[in-house]
Image (cartoon, rainbow, N blue to C red; front, side, top):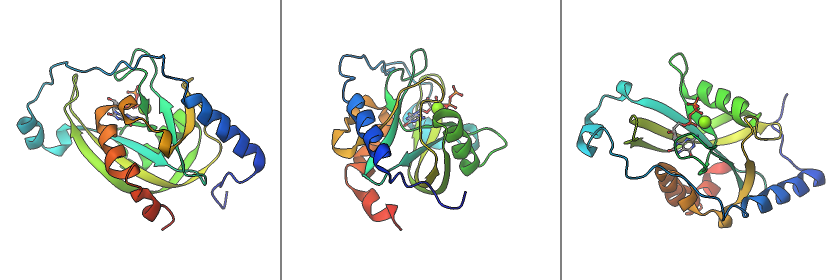
Length: 189
Ligand SMILES: Nc1nc2c([nH]c(=O)n2[C@H]2C[C@H](O)[C@@H](COP(=O)(O)OP(=O)(O)OP(=O)(O)O)O2)c(=O)[nH]1
Ligand SMILES: [Mg+2]
């Protein structure tokens, strides 16, 4: 593999459009974001925790050549069930963030990713345990994403993003980074 796949052929364009259309048909489905569950820590306690006591979560934000962003849908039975998300997950003890991002993207959406830039991070007072979430802009990818764990995966036009469908930390990322078009300056650098 020498160059990242840029998804340039016409067939791919058709697939992307239909995936994006399917993303707009979720209105009837309930997003079961766990809200109101009492967090273990106060905000002050969370801020004071040493970082090694927090689970690290890494997520990747990928844009395709049409300016669409890759989104998947969390399955039933997990926290934030049915909400939309950027692919990613928990960093394992032996991994750095880049290794975890590569593994999560292979496992969840079947693509190889490379060339990351940290764009937003936040400590989250999760209802079962606190975590520190890091969102990376992913500049290069190889392969065609699909729901490798049976989940729905699609390219979403930026103007179709309803941030209320995402977990709270991701809502902030979308508001601070994606809806401001800041990625446009970063992405081709
Ligand atoms: N993947 C992802 N997780 C997010 C986002 N926003 C957000 O608050 N989270 C939270 C949900 C989870 O509490 C936590 C970890 O994500 P995850 O459930 O994907 O972890 P994982 O892939 O390692 O899954 P598992 O092995 O624990 O089943 O991060 C997001 O945009 N993408
Ligand atoms: Mg995950």
